[in-house]
Length: 206
Ligand SMILES: [Zn+2]
Image (cartoon, rainbow, N blue to C red):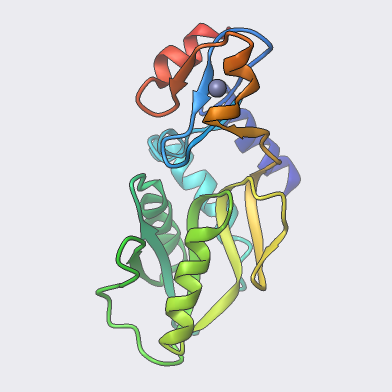
């Protein structure tokens, strides 16, 4: 399993899905948070290639106990929706129903019932705030959340979040700073939007 994981990480690096600054050139601004960093994992690009999407989803799906029980594979939609593509792929592999949750409203339009089992899949985890919003909603609906959380990138520096064991491909802490006190900006490095200026960011720092 470790070899498979290493192989997927190698593909992430080869296809410039992971970008890391090497002491010169520009750095990245996170689009969903007011922070800057010298490292970025671009989950949109991780789900862009059909072969890689399938390999990554199969690796993560292997962590879920094989069961005849019915359950939902649930994700959320936010400003970046790579989570949904990953959850769709994992739902297909496992043969379980797909659902998603609107982080902005805290609601889902899928007909979940009390005691339904739910597997949560997201593209990456940083603070875990969105996961907690989902957990609160599922708890309120009296659903049973499967204690395994699948994600491409675990950047929370934790192995568990609110009782869910995180299974990921990339796992590492990310050093980042609030935009206003970013030492990379202070040192004169240019800041680029990680998502909208990805090409410029990843070609400038070779
Ligand atoms: Zn900065």
